[in-house]
Image (cartoon, rainbow, N blue to C red; front, side, top):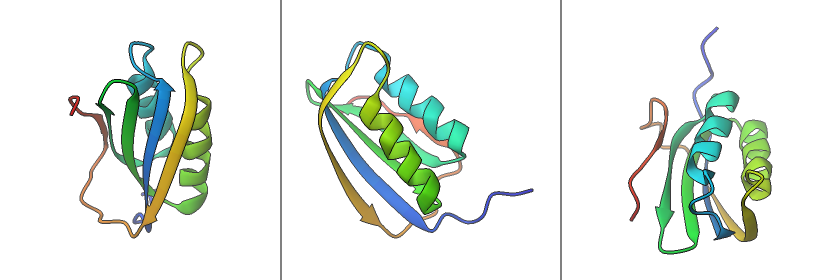
Length: 98
């Protein structure tokens, strides 16, 4: 059964101890497990940015997982922006740092 067309986009920033702890790989695995598309990348020294598209319930679960982070991380602050899905992604990838 094919995934339904994504109807929402979650733009998320997480700050804290989120680099050099496997955070981007953790985020990508969570997104792939939930069937989401989009990307994650490091931004600056202590921040990660992600865009994920999918169904709202899956995106809510994704946001909770990202806020918890992997064991070695510590998310001190996060921000979320909801947008309509652009449907331009075919999978979820780890992008180079900005």
